Length: 573
Ligand SMILES: Cc1cc2nc3c(=O)[nH]c(=O)nc-3n(C[C@H](O)[C@H](O)[C@H](O)COP(=O)(O)OP(=O)(O)OC[C@H]3O[C@@H](n4cnc5c(N)ncnc54)[C@H](O)[C@@H]3O)c2cc1C
Image: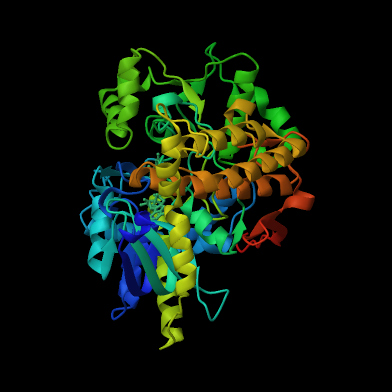
């Protein structure tokens, strides 16, 4: 018990608690203060908001900006674009709301000091494509974090949130959260009238292409550990569209982005024999998905599909034709700077592999299957901040409506959870005595081993890269059985120190989110997004039965999932 008694329990009261200080969390914190001048607003983050989340390393473009002040796009146009790219299924209401506020978000970023490039002729923001504008974004996150820091009553950095807490008088209402400080191990109990979960996406639930010491080199940020999904799943929230994972085409081995190359440098792709391969697959794609292939722009998943089929047909590797564009010194500079602002590793990979894009067309590949989207896609950094703002405003209204009513925490609940949270430290300390060398013990499982086991299950049974993104009902059913066994073993996770304790809880969150992804993938008996994943037993898009959302709900007492369909409302023609 010494392990627990050494640790202080810190109680934090707030009106609004924001979990995760990335783009969404900073937006929620900022906007909560705007509408709730007298409220206590707390933001809690497992890293440090200064450089946390998927934007931590900086970005080179803001991918969602309407440009309404110049009549460039309307929110309706963005809804149509996102709906088209997601093969008909998006929450149009959410997408519309984000789109109509996103410009004001970007204007705030500029006011706060973010340098946005301008077209010297028109004076407008420099466009990279229809929706993207170009920025000098190395310091994007520190600029956004500063606004959140000034807005928050308090920011708690280095706290890994592990569970939400329910109100003891109202079992279906969230009343707070718990977590631990990853530096000193103190236990934190947050009580709040409204809780906003903005803890980012999920990488590393599928096996990455890079292995061994390089396994952190995934497309999506490796620290995106699925808490945004697992925290609400555990308390019975309804999840939507968890089967809609995203797979992206990127430069091979470094996952450098291709957007600026396609859109700004006007580069294009070809197969290993220098041929344009996309038209080859037109008829077979049409056979699978009908007229979605005629849409403009062609949905991302279908372009992935053509690439994957071409490689399967033995005509790889697929290359980006950069040799022509890089002859122009301006474009060459833009091409390199594009990585220096956000994926410097790609430049290093090219240097290490003797690839000068002026002389050699670099290879492309598809990323590991990763992030889930939850029905409101294509918001990116600016849209995520905007969605956070919308959530913050709604939370303030909720808190004001509650009036003097205070949330009630159950001490027994958080004390029980405290024991569970620190258990991996105890498992390790006790089990370590059974071995004299090495890392493998008969009594505990290290987080890295659990993670590799998860990624193997997801890869082989749920359609990861090793299975060419393909799965079917028997595979998914077996995958769920294996995930169930993995979940049982998670009670024996062993953590050597606080860093490993964080890894242990990130793994717990990833496993639960993976189970949710698998349930949704099993439920939707069609292949709606070929190129993202394939249900080989239902290879075609089926608009008659599946032009709908999928919803799941987890019951933590029984461990069972309830699945249902929900209608898609088209509010834009
Ligand atoms: C490689 C890459 C390139 C991208 N390029 C662009 C681009 O060019 N342009 C663009 O506009 N967008 C781009 N994006 C998208 C953009 O980064 C995301 O849309 C945006 O960051 C999502 O915001 P978020 O708040 O949901 O998640 P994040 O910004 O990732 O924030 C989540 C936060 O939650 C914290 N957290 C997670 N779990 C916990 C926990 N349990 N307890 C406490 N804190 C927790 C994390 O540390 C993090 O700070 C890119 C993303 C990636 C990965």
